[in-house]
Amino acid sequence: PTPTAAPPWPPTAAPTAPVGAPPGAAPRRPFAERLPSTRIIAAAAGLVLGIGLIGGAAAGSWLADAPAHGAPAPEEVFAKGRDAWRNTPADTLFPRTVQGLAAGPGGADRTWTRIAVAPDTDCSATYEGPLAAELAPAGCARLLRATYVDATRTAVITVGAQTTKADHTGMMNLNARFSTKDLGTRKDLMPLPLAAKGTPAADFGPDQRASWTVRVLTEIPVVVYAVSGFADGRTVTDPQPADAAVQPGTATTPGESGLGHDAKGLADKISATFRTASGVPAQPTEEMP
Image (spheres, rainbow, N blue to C red):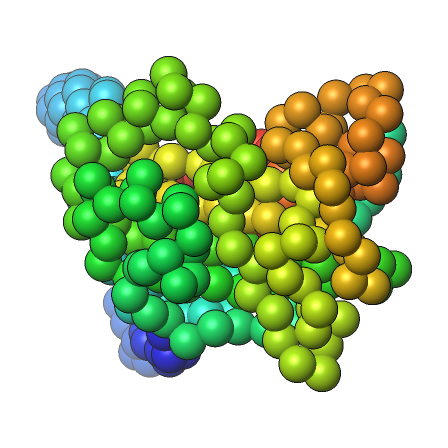
Protein backbone atom coordinates (compact mmCIF):
# COMPACT_ATOMS: atom_id res chain seq x y z
CA PRO A 1 0.00 0.00 0.00
CA THR A 2 1.17 3.49 -0.71
CA PRO A 3 0.42 6.64 1.33
CA THR A 4 -2.31 8.86 0.02
CA ALA A 5 -2.46 12.60 0.59
CA ALA A 6 -5.44 13.87 2.55
CA PRO A 7 -7.58 16.46 0.75
CA PRO A 8 -7.13 20.02 2.05
CA TRP A 9 -9.77 21.42 4.39
CA PRO A 10 -12.05 24.04 2.77
CA PRO A 11 -11.21 27.64 3.75
CA THR A 12 -13.20 29.08 6.61
CA ALA A 13 -15.38 32.00 5.59
CA ALA A 14 -14.45 35.34 7.17
CA PRO A 15 -17.04 36.70 9.64
CA THR A 16 -19.27 39.44 8.28
CA ALA A 17 -18.52 42.86 9.79
CA PRO A 18 -21.42 44.64 11.55
CA VAL A 19 -23.10 47.31 9.51
CA GLY A 20 -23.80 50.67 11.14
CA ALA A 21 -26.41 53.26 10.31
CA PRO A 22 -25.62 55.08 7.07
CA PRO A 23 -24.60 58.74 7.24
CA GLY A 24 -27.44 61.20 7.09
CA ALA A 25 -30.09 58.73 8.30
CA ALA A 26 -33.39 60.22 9.53
CA PRO A 27 -33.65 60.81 13.31
CA ARG A 28 -35.28 58.01 15.25
CA ARG A 29 -38.90 58.44 16.35
CA PRO A 30 -39.78 58.74 20.03
CA PHE A 31 -39.90 55.45 21.92
CA ALA A 32 -43.68 55.52 22.41
CA GLU A 33 -44.27 55.92 18.68
CA ARG A 34 -42.00 52.98 17.93
CA LEU A 35 -43.91 50.48 20.14
CA PRO A 36 -45.85 47.92 18.04
CA SER A 37 -49.61 47.72 18.24
CA THR A 38 -51.41 44.94 20.14
CA ARG A 39 -52.43 43.27 16.87
CA ILE A 40 -48.84 43.20 15.64
CA ILE A 41 -47.63 41.74 18.94
CA ALA A 42 -50.21 38.95 18.79
CA ALA A 43 -49.31 38.09 15.21
CA ALA A 44 -45.61 38.04 16.04
CA ALA A 45 -46.22 35.79 19.05
CA GLY A 46 -48.19 33.37 16.92
CA LEU A 47 -45.45 33.32 14.31
CA VAL A 48 -42.75 32.61 16.92
CA LEU A 49 -44.84 29.82 18.44
CA GLY A 50 -45.37 28.21 15.05
CA ILE A 51 -41.70 28.39 14.18
CA GLY A 52 -40.84 26.88 17.57
CA LEU A 53 -43.16 23.92 17.05
CA ILE A 54 -41.82 23.28 13.56
CA GLY A 55 -38.22 23.63 14.77
CA GLY A 56 -38.85 21.30 17.68
CA ALA A 57 -40.33 18.66 15.42
CA ALA A 58 -37.41 18.98 12.99
CA ALA A 59 -34.88 18.72 15.83
CA GLY A 60 -36.60 15.61 17.17
CA SER A 61 -36.53 14.04 13.74
CA TRP A 62 -32.84 14.92 13.33
CA LEU A 63 -31.94 13.41 16.69
CA ALA A 64 -33.88 10.27 15.89
CA ASP A 65 -32.08 9.89 12.57
CA ALA A 66 -28.59 10.84 13.84
CA PRO A 67 -27.43 7.33 14.85
CA ALA A 68 -28.43 5.93 11.47
CA HIS A 69 -26.53 8.64 9.61
CA GLY A 70 -23.50 8.49 11.97
CA ALA A 71 -22.81 4.74 11.73
CA PRO A 72 -21.98 3.15 8.36
CA ALA A 73 -24.03 0.16 7.27
CA PRO A 74 -22.43 -3.26 7.88
CA GLU A 75 -22.34 -3.88 4.12
CA GLU A 76 -20.42 -0.64 3.61
CA VAL A 77 -17.93 -1.54 6.33
CA PHE A 78 -17.42 -5.04 4.90
CA ALA A 79 -16.82 -3.68 1.40
CA LYS A 80 -14.39 -1.06 2.69
CA GLY A 81 -12.56 -3.72 4.68
CA ARG A 82 -11.98 -5.74 1.52
CA ASP A 83 -9.99 -2.85 0.03
CA ALA A 84 -8.30 -1.61 3.22
CA TRP A 85 -5.04 -3.31 2.27
CA ARG A 86 -4.81 -1.30 -0.97
CA ASN A 87 -6.36 2.00 0.14
CA THR A 88 -4.63 2.45 3.51
CA PRO A 89 -0.93 3.35 3.95
CA ALA A 90 1.28 0.57 5.30
CA ASP A 91 2.33 2.80 8.20
CA THR A 92 -1.32 3.01 9.24
CA LEU A 93 -2.10 -0.70 9.05
CA PHE A 94 1.27 -1.68 10.53
CA PRO A 95 2.42 1.34 12.58
CA ARG A 96 6.14 1.86 13.00
CA THR A 97 5.69 1.90 16.78
CA VAL A 98 2.85 0.28 18.70
CA GLN A 99 2.12 0.99 22.35
CA GLY A 100 0.51 -1.82 24.32
CA LEU A 101 -0.79 -0.24 27.51
CA ALA A 102 -1.07 -2.94 30.22
CA ALA A 103 -0.51 -5.55 27.50
CA GLY A 104 2.37 -7.34 29.24
CA PRO A 105 2.54 -9.79 32.12
CA GLY A 106 1.05 -8.36 35.31
CA GLY A 107 -0.43 -5.43 33.40
CA ALA A 108 2.96 -4.04 32.38
CA ASP A 109 3.13 -1.72 29.37
CA ARG A 110 4.71 -2.98 26.17
CA THR A 111 6.22 -1.17 23.21
CA TRP A 112 6.80 -2.85 19.86
CA THR A 113 8.86 -1.39 17.00
CA ARG A 114 8.47 -2.51 13.42
CA ILE A 115 11.72 -3.85 11.94
CA ALA A 116 10.59 -5.55 8.72
CA VAL A 117 7.73 -5.36 6.22
CA ALA A 118 7.21 -7.95 3.50
CA PRO A 119 5.88 -6.92 0.09
CA ASP A 120 2.18 -7.69 -0.25
CA THR A 121 1.73 -11.07 -1.84
CA ASP A 122 -0.61 -13.91 -2.65
CA CYS A 123 -1.38 -16.40 0.11
CA SER A 124 0.42 -19.73 -0.01
CA ALA A 125 2.04 -22.35 2.19
CA THR A 126 5.38 -20.69 1.40
CA TYR A 127 4.43 -17.76 3.61
CA GLU A 128 1.82 -19.23 5.94
CA GLY A 129 2.66 -22.92 6.26
CA PRO A 130 -0.17 -25.45 6.81
CA LEU A 131 -2.38 -22.60 8.04
CA ALA A 132 -2.87 -21.56 4.41
CA ALA A 133 -4.83 -24.73 3.65
CA GLU A 134 -7.24 -24.10 6.53
CA LEU A 135 -7.85 -20.52 5.36
CA ALA A 136 -8.23 -21.53 1.70
CA PRO A 137 -12.04 -22.05 1.82
CA ALA A 138 -12.42 -18.27 2.31
CA GLY A 139 -10.17 -17.49 -0.65
CA CYS A 140 -7.26 -15.07 -0.60
CA ALA A 141 -7.15 -11.57 -2.05
CA ARG A 142 -3.88 -10.41 -0.47
CA LEU A 143 -1.45 -11.15 2.35
CA LEU A 144 0.44 -8.50 4.33
CA ARG A 145 3.11 -9.27 6.95
CA ALA A 146 5.43 -7.36 9.25
CA THR A 147 7.80 -8.21 12.09
CA TYR A 148 8.23 -6.25 15.33
CA VAL A 149 10.70 -6.29 18.21
CA ASP A 150 9.90 -5.41 21.81
CA ALA A 151 11.59 -2.56 23.71
CA THR A 152 14.13 -4.89 25.32
CA ARG A 153 15.00 -6.38 21.90
CA THR A 154 14.56 -9.88 23.32
CA ALA A 155 11.23 -10.77 21.66
CA VAL A 156 10.33 -10.73 17.98
CA ILE A 157 6.78 -11.01 16.65
CA THR A 158 5.51 -11.51 13.11
CA VAL A 159 2.00 -10.24 12.37
CA GLY A 160 0.07 -11.27 9.27
CA ALA A 161 -3.19 -9.98 7.81
CA GLN A 162 -4.86 -11.98 5.07
CA THR A 163 -7.70 -10.33 3.17
CA THR A 164 -10.08 -13.03 1.97
CA LYS A 165 -12.52 -13.25 -0.94
CA ALA A 166 -15.37 -14.47 1.25
CA ASP A 167 -18.65 -12.67 1.84
CA HIS A 168 -20.04 -12.07 5.33
CA THR A 169 -21.55 -15.55 5.53
CA GLY A 170 -18.26 -17.07 4.43
CA MET A 171 -16.37 -15.24 7.19
CA MET A 172 -18.93 -16.35 9.77
CA ASN A 173 -18.54 -19.95 8.61
CA LEU A 174 -14.74 -19.68 8.71
CA ASN A 175 -14.87 -18.27 12.23
CA ALA A 176 -17.24 -21.03 13.35
CA ARG A 177 -14.97 -23.73 11.91
CA PHE A 178 -11.88 -22.31 13.62
CA SER A 179 -13.77 -22.08 16.91
CA THR A 180 -15.48 -25.47 16.94
CA LYS A 181 -12.40 -27.37 15.74
CA ASP A 182 -9.89 -25.31 17.78
CA LEU A 183 -7.84 -24.76 14.66
CA GLY A 184 -6.27 -21.61 16.08
CA THR A 185 -4.64 -23.59 18.90
CA ARG A 186 -3.15 -26.44 16.87
CA LYS A 187 0.64 -26.39 16.90
CA ASP A 188 0.87 -27.73 13.37
CA LEU A 189 -1.06 -24.65 12.20
CA MET A 190 1.23 -22.07 13.77
CA PRO A 191 1.87 -19.18 11.33
CA LEU A 192 5.33 -18.93 9.81
CA PRO A 193 7.61 -16.10 11.00
CA LEU A 194 9.03 -13.35 8.80
CA ALA A 195 12.78 -13.19 9.33
CA ALA A 196 14.84 -10.23 8.13
CA LYS A 197 18.61 -10.07 7.72
CA GLY A 198 20.40 -7.42 9.72
CA THR A 199 17.58 -7.18 12.30
CA PRO A 200 16.87 -8.84 15.66
CA ALA A 201 14.61 -11.22 13.69
CA ALA A 202 17.43 -12.52 11.49
CA ASP A 203 17.27 -15.95 13.15
CA PHE A 204 13.49 -16.08 13.63
CA GLY A 205 12.63 -19.42 12.02
CA PRO A 206 10.02 -22.15 12.53
CA ASP A 207 11.96 -23.70 15.42
CA GLN A 208 12.04 -20.39 17.26
CA ARG A 209 8.25 -19.98 17.42
CA ALA A 210 6.99 -19.82 21.01
CA SER A 211 3.41 -18.48 21.00
CA TRP A 212 0.74 -17.57 18.46
CA THR A 213 -2.85 -16.52 17.88
CA VAL A 214 -5.22 -16.52 14.88
CA ARG A 215 -8.16 -14.09 14.63
CA VAL A 216 -10.95 -14.49 12.08
CA LEU A 217 -12.61 -11.07 11.89
CA THR A 218 -16.26 -11.24 10.85
CA GLU A 219 -17.12 -7.53 10.42
CA ILE A 220 -14.57 -7.39 7.60
CA PRO A 221 -13.03 -10.10 5.37
CA VAL A 222 -9.68 -10.21 7.17
CA VAL A 223 -7.80 -12.85 9.18
CA VAL A 224 -5.11 -11.52 11.54
CA TYR A 225 -2.50 -13.73 13.15
CA ALA A 226 0.69 -13.27 15.16
CA VAL A 227 3.56 -15.54 16.17
CA SER A 228 6.33 -14.68 18.64
CA GLY A 229 9.78 -15.99 19.57
CA PHE A 230 13.10 -15.04 21.14
CA ALA A 231 15.36 -12.61 19.30
CA ASP A 232 18.50 -14.60 20.18
CA GLY A 233 17.40 -17.48 17.98
CA ARG A 234 16.97 -20.06 20.72
CA THR A 235 14.82 -23.09 19.94
CA VAL A 236 11.49 -23.41 21.76
CA THR A 237 10.37 -26.99 22.39
CA ASP A 238 7.08 -26.19 24.12
CA PRO A 239 5.20 -23.54 22.10
CA GLN A 240 1.85 -22.54 23.54
CA PRO A 241 -1.20 -20.67 22.16
CA ALA A 242 -1.29 -17.06 23.33
CA ASP A 243 -4.69 -17.33 25.04
CA ALA A 244 -3.28 -20.06 27.30
CA ALA A 245 0.14 -18.45 27.77
CA VAL A 246 -1.30 -15.18 29.12
CA GLN A 247 -3.21 -16.84 31.95
CA PRO A 248 -1.84 -15.82 35.39
CA GLY A 249 0.54 -18.34 36.88
CA THR A 250 1.26 -20.16 33.61
CA ALA A 251 4.61 -21.87 34.20
CA THR A 252 5.67 -22.32 30.58
CA THR A 253 8.35 -20.65 28.51
CA PRO A 254 5.85 -18.54 26.52
CA GLY A 255 3.95 -17.66 29.69
CA GLU A 256 6.90 -16.69 31.86
CA SER A 257 8.75 -14.83 29.11
CA GLY A 258 5.74 -12.73 28.07
CA LEU A 259 5.83 -14.06 24.50
CA GLY A 260 2.18 -15.02 24.75
CA HIS A 261 1.38 -11.42 25.70
CA ASP A 262 3.43 -10.15 22.76
CA ALA A 263 1.54 -12.29 20.24
CA LYS A 264 -1.86 -11.46 21.71
CA GLY A 265 -1.14 -7.75 22.20
CA LEU A 266 0.09 -7.15 18.65
CA ALA A 267 -2.74 -9.17 17.13
CA ASP A 268 -5.18 -7.00 19.10
CA LYS A 269 -3.58 -3.81 17.82
CA ILE A 270 -3.31 -4.81 14.17
CA SER A 271 -6.89 -6.09 14.22
CA ALA A 272 -7.84 -2.63 15.50
CA THR A 273 -6.00 -0.81 12.69
CA PHE A 274 -7.81 -2.86 10.03
CA ARG A 275 -11.17 -2.33 11.72
CA THR A 276 -10.58 1.40 12.02
CA ALA A 277 -9.48 1.66 8.37
CA SER A 278 -12.74 -0.07 7.44
CA GLY A 279 -14.96 2.21 9.51
CA VAL A 280 -15.63 -0.16 12.40
CA PRO A 281 -15.92 1.82 15.69
CA ALA A 282 -12.85 1.07 17.82
CA GLN A 283 -13.32 -0.94 20.99
CA PRO A 284 -11.75 0.38 24.23
CA THR A 285 -9.13 -2.39 24.22
CA GLU A 286 -8.26 -1.80 20.55
CA GLU A 287 -7.67 1.95 20.41
CA MET A 288 -4.33 2.87 18.95
CA PRO A 289 -2.18 5.43 20.81
